[in-house]
Length: 229
Image (spheres, rainbow, N blue to C red):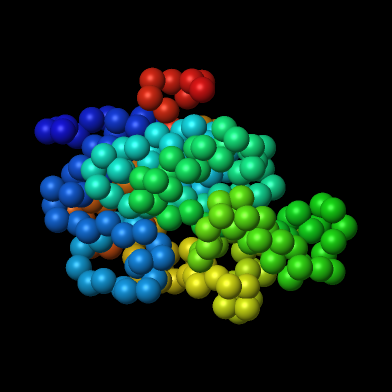
């Protein structure tokens, strides 16, 4: 275990340091579903991973968390370059799940509908995304996080999903609900001529904020170099 803070970079080593430091300071860790259902009090961290691509890197996060006895939530895309039915991608998701982590839907239903001329059947497409993922995983899915959360004039699933009664789709929570992003310190990377954080590195909030939600995207993280597989 690190005894001093390493440099704030996007290596898995630094991610592990951040989690270890939080454990040392008495933070409890919860996946999104258990937190949504139970709302535990006290210091806590929610770990969220949006798997846009780079499935193997998602597994690296899961291994670190499982080695520390922690659970996280991984949001899986349907309209992505990977495929939950493709054997290697499926095995990656199975490895994540066997580590005790939650798998949920990373939806871009409105973008897909707009690009394919199906904006008049959003509800059907949303049901289809959920069924597809649950069929691939052979497991129930309870949560959703939209793939894009930009407030712009281009198609964006976030407002549409927020307007829906998720129980009608068999879901329980939206990862952008205030319980996750407003009532807690919400920390995420951003890309602006390079990878960075919206404010500062997640490690800087450990010991400062009582309740943290940390969102990462596996595509930006690595062991030695960004270009590694």
